[in-house]
Image (cartoon, rainbow over all chains, first blue to last red; front, side, top):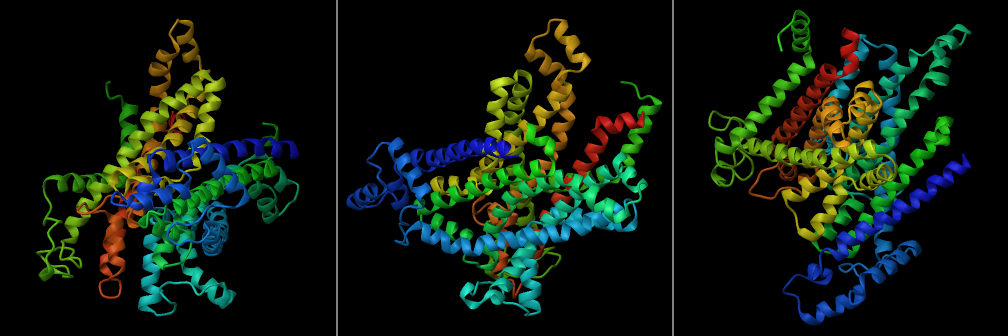
Length: 314
Length: 285
C-alpha cells in the first residue's frame, strides 16, 4: 500500500507541474502583454510600465514561471491588482465559504444516495425501484442552479422561511452560517445524489448475483450482514469512481451556485476578477481549482487501493 | 439486407422500447424547434418593447413575454438552437480529436499509450467551467469559449471509450485474421475496429451531448457563454432571477426546457445502448 501511494504521488507531482505549466502558458504567454490585457488598450504608458514591472513581464517567461511556481509552493500568490491585498489572503477568506459548502453538499449527496440506492437494488423491479429510477432520471436532468433558483423562490420568496441569499460569516456562529449554506448545499447535492444512487444500485445488483453472496447467505449470515459486509463493499469501486468525478463537477457547481445565493465564496471572487480583468486573481484561483481536482483524483486512487487490494499491484 | 423474421421481431422490440421512442420523440421535437428558429420565430428576439413587458400567456404570446417585452417562446426556440449548436460542436471536437488518440493508444501501446493516458489525466483536471474562466479572462466572453471549454473536456472522454473498445477487439480472431492476411494497422483500425466500436461512440456521444447542454446552460448563466442578442436558456434564467418576486414564471420555462431536453437525450442514450449493446444482442439470440 505504501509503495503504491509513493508511486502515485510521483505521478501526482508531475501532473500538478504540467497543469501549472498549462495555466501559465494560457494566461501569461498566449495573451502577449498581460499588462495591456488588464488595463485595456487606452491605458497610459507609464501605468502600463509600472504594472509590467510589478508582474515582472520584462523578464523571460521561463524565469517568471519558476518565480510563480516558487510563490505557489511558499503560499505567496502575488498581490491582487484591484484589491491591493495579497491574493492568498483573498482566496483564504473565500475558501472558508466555498470548501464547507462543497463538503456539506458531498456529505448530503452521499447521505441521500446510499439509502436510496440500496432500497432500489434490494427491491429491484418493484414499485419502489421503478419510482426511484424515474425520480433519479429527472434528478440527473435538472441543472443545479435552476433547482437552486426554485428553492430560493419556494423557501425565501413564497414561504419567507430563510433569507434569499448572503452569508453572515462564521463570526456570526456555526448555526446561522450553516443555515445560510443549507439551501445551496441541497441544490448541489440532489442532482449528484441522483447519479450516485443509480451507480450504487447497478453496482449492488451486479454484486448481489455473485456466488460469494450466496455462500455468505448459505453459511447463515443475515441479509443485512451480507449487504453491508459483502455487497456494498464490492459495489464501492464504481461509486468511488463517480464520487471522484463528481467532485470536479461539485467545484464547478459551487462556483455557479454561489452566484445564485450571493455567497462570498471563490465563485463570486473569480467572476468579479474576470469583470475587473484582475488576471493575477484569476490565475491563482484557476490554479487552486485545478490542484484541488488533481488532489481529489489522487485521493480516490488511494481509496480504490484501500477498498480493492488487487489494484495496489498495478 | 432483407427483412428476415427475426430482424423484424427485433425491430418491433426496439420500437416497443419506451425510452428509445420517448427520448427520440423529445429530441426530435427540440431539434425541430431549434431548426425552425433559423428561419422563423413567432416574434423577433432582438426587438425590445416596453409596452408588451411581462404579459401573461395569451393567443398572441403563448408563453407570455419577459421584462423587456420579448416573446418567451421565441427566446426559448433561439435558446434551443444555441444550446444544441454549442453541445453538438463540442461533441464533434471530442470525437474528431479523442477517438484517433484512443485508437492510436490501443493500437500502438507503449509510449504512445502512456502519453495519451497522461494527457487524459491532465485534461480531466480542467473542468469545462475552469477552462471557460481562463479563456474568457483572456479573450472576453462568447459562444466560442463555451464550445472550446466543453469540447476540450470531451477529448479524453472519447479517447477513453475508443481505447477501451479497441482493446476489447484487438485480440479477437477476425482482427488477427486481418493481420495475418497482411492488412496494415491503419486499415485494420478503420475496417475492423472502428465499425465495431461505433455503437459505443454513438451512446457516449448522446451522453456527452446531454452533459454539454447542461454545461452550456451553466456557463451562459454565469455570463461565460453566448452573448446578446443571441438568446440562451442559461442567461434567460439569470435575467429571470432578478424578477423572481414579480414574475416567477420567467424562471420556470427556460429551466423546464433544459430538463426536458436533457431528459430526452438521456432516455435516447439509454434506448440506444439497449439497442446497440452487443451483449444484450447475444442474450436475445
